Image (cartoon, rainbow, N blue to C red; front, side, top):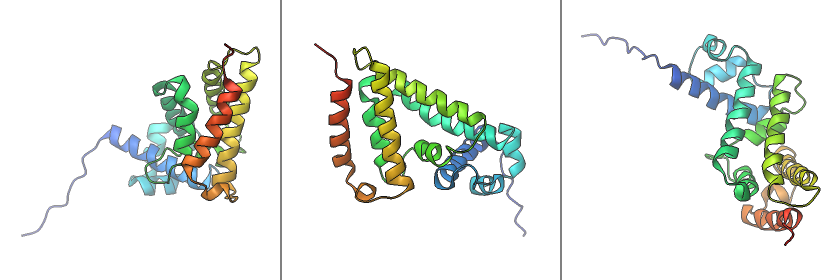
Length: 188
């Protein structure tokens, strides 16, 4: 008796999701420029031709990776919890956390259509954060909080500077959210 080779069932949605997950992990770890299409396909367990079939290009895949995580967080998180949720997801251990911000930070020098997605996501986050303040300069305050969030990600995850790199997430959240509440507080 010989075993018949197992035929892998075609599932476009599962393949697309596997490519997105693999790309998100690799972009977060290496950035856009150091991530290859071959590596993404290998991690996803598919032929690299499928990446082009479903996304058209590495740039388009990168855009979707950034948009997926960021927009989902904006859409599913109440405005008064957005900063805390974004900060907490950035600070959590690597297991199971959203690595969109890592991909964003590691690829900021890459000039492509994804730069427009990065700008748009930044604007969307800032717009939501601005609703937390009734100050005349609410948009500036929101941009400052967003810049602080990105800076924390850069110092902690990209440069690995201590003591922030190994700081307890609860301590970082307590300090950052307390200061951000002051910046974004409503008058009255």
